[in-house]
Image 1 (cartoon, rainbow, N blue to C red):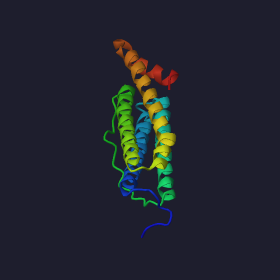
Image 2: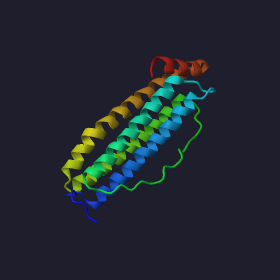
Image 3: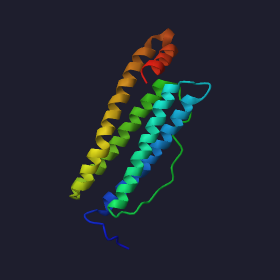
Image 4: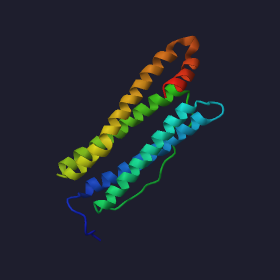
Length: 174
């Protein structure tokens, strides 16, 4: 049954939004796992934990925004199974940040693809919404993660004090 409010909302972009919702929920789940990893008693890097838990909340909030948007545009929400994170154990903060940077880039690529398709279907409302609500934050997050990876790489490179460097990074940077 066609909804009364659906206008200029192509089926492909509606499906893309559903896929994006699921990616955002998967990202939230992955960042939650990261946050809990760094909260473990044998890891005990509380600022890493807080950083990743905040990212988890941000991704969940963005998924909720997309759910609301889908309803506002008259689309149908089709949630999928949230898969288990690809990793459960991390070698340390640098590995987690490097993974997060690559993961955030893949999320950004998906956002750009959805924007491109919406533009192709002449949907300026969706294009504007993605630019306003998601793309700026995505680029800012990539920049922040890139800076953290660079800094922690330099700190950890000092071979005898690599673990101490990670501890200090946790205390003073995050």
